[in-house]
Image (cartoon, rainbow, N blue to C red; front, side):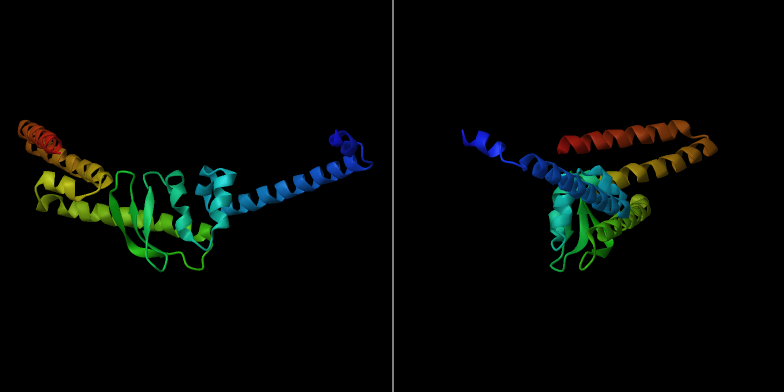
Amino acid sequence: PKIIDICATEGLLEKWRECNITLDMVQKGLEDYLETKRNGFARFYFLSNDELLEILSQTKDPTRVQPFLSKVFEAMSKVIFTSDNEVTHMISPESEQVEMVSPVVTHQKAVEVWMGDLQDGMCMAIRNALEVGISSYNTMDRTDWVLANPAQIVLNGSQVFWTSEVEEAFDGNVLDQYAKKLSQQILDLIMLLRKG
């Protein structure tokens, strides 16, 4: 019953219209602000407005980005922070850890800046891990090598050596021997999987 009296108040409709105009202006300002943050770090386009606002509202605590990392970076579920809020490792959804070549500093940086640094650090860390993986391929048993390296490094490193070894097999006319070697590698991996 009171709602009818309140709705009949003179000038209420005009106040509501003014409020809607103000709300539209605030919404436009918020959209513009989020767009500038997305322009600063393009991977923010993968996040909804609510998720991006959550990250931006916690700029003093970089660890609050953790729940959103998998949406921003494929195959990165979280990172390890030091007590100084420097990122030292990245962790995949499969719990594989890759150490950063140098820690990513987040202290007193805008989130879009240090996330860009994290992206660069991620590329350097994977490149470094790939170099280490490729250089260690011939120094250890292949099944040990597979276990000692992250999956992405194993996939890429295996492709590098497969290409090289196939070329050598063609040049040396020893494809039969190489096919046997590949079959044995597959069998070794099957046994490795069965061991758990």
